[in-house]
Length: 148
Image (cartoon, rainbow, N blue to C red; front, side, top):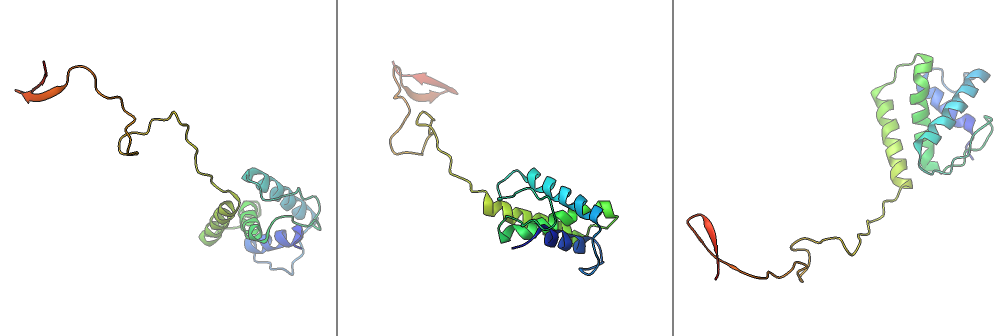
């Protein structure tokens, strides 16, 4: 199982050039945990997230969501650590979040009410009223004449 510390270490590795060997200070870890919680809650679609309190807490999302967590957390952390956000990181964050959204959110076909007008050509049977009264028969001199 992946822990919050693993996600945060991977995000810091994307932001800084320190690698996995450099320890993350306690203040930085708590800042990253708060940022991670806020970020996932703001996504506003269900991924099975439980709020993280400690670095040792287990992440309760599917494996497909981990890439989106790492890349988007790195994107959120970069300004706080004066790191330059590369176009590759932006693209990876956007792409991984879009993939996660497609995986989680399922669009259902719309159900139209029976009273909704159908328009012409949609069905073999016509839903329009048959003309009543005088019928058009010809056009003469730019105006339409009615049958007597």
